[in-house]
Image 1 (cartoon, rainbow, N blue to C red):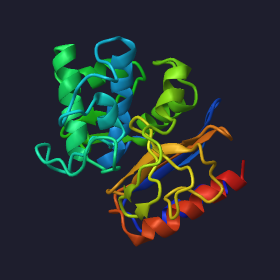
Image 2: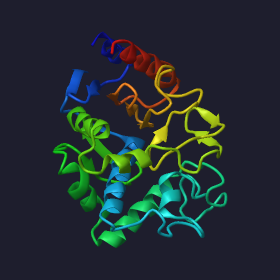
Image 3: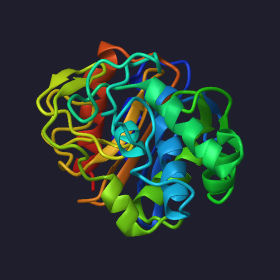
Image 4: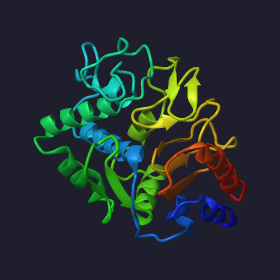
Amino acid sequence: MAALDAISRFGADHAAGAVIDRSGVVSSVGDESFRYPLASVTKLFSSYATLIAIEERTVGLDDPAGPPNSTLRHLLAHASGLSPDHRDRCLAPPGTRRIYSNAGFEVLADHVAERAEVPFREYLYEAVFGPLSMAGADLDGSPASGATASLADCTLFASELLSPTLIARSTLGQATKVAFSGIDGVLPGFGRQHPCDWGLGFEIRDGKSPHWTGQNNSPATFGHFGQLGSFVWADPAVPVALVVLSDRAFGPWAGAAWPVLSDAVLAER
C-alpha cells in the first residue's frame, strides 16, 4: 500500500505502520518486532482489560470510583472531573466536563486490581496480552501511559478491535459510543472541542476539528494517540484499522502528517 510510504518521511529514528482489515494485515512497513514506548496508546489496552473485567463481573460500570459521585464509567470516559495528573484534585463535578486525566486511569486500574485481587499489570497480561499472543507487549509503568509494544503486537490488537474475540461485539459497541454526550473539553494537542466526545476508554472522532485522524474517517472512528508519536484507529464504517508507531515525540508535524496519511490509506481501500 503506497500510502504507508509516507511513514518513512516522519523524521523518526524508528517508525512502522500497518493497515488491517477483518482478514488481517493488508500492508505494513518497518520492523515488526521493534518495541516502542506507546505513551497514551496504553489506555486502549487498559480500557480493554477493564471491559473484560466488566464482562466477568469483577467490576461494574456503575461502581463508585474516583472523586465523590464518580463511577468507573466516568473514569473510563474522562468525565470524573479529576485533574490530568493529580488523583486528589477534582476540577469539576463528575459528568460536566471532559478533562483528559492520566490520574483517572490510574484510579481505574487500582479499582480493577483491588476487585480482581491481582496487580493490574498481571490482570492486563492475563486478560489481553496473553490471549492475543502479544508476545512483545509489556506494562512497565502507569496504566495510562506505561506500555511498550511492537508493530506485530499492535496489529493483533487492532484486529481485535475490528473483530472482537475477547469481549462481546455488543460490549465493544457500547464502549465506542459517546459516554456523557454533549460535554466540552480539550483534546490534547488539538485544542478545545465542542463537544469533546469520548467513549469508554476510546476517543471517538465524531465531528471534532481539528483532529488526528483523516477528514474522510467516519464519525464512528475510534482509537487513541500518544505523545511519543504513535496511534491506533479503527473505522468500523470501512472497516479498516491503521497502526502507526514512531519514536518521534508528538508535535505540529504529527497534526499535519497523520490526517493526510489516514486519508491516503482510506483512498486506497
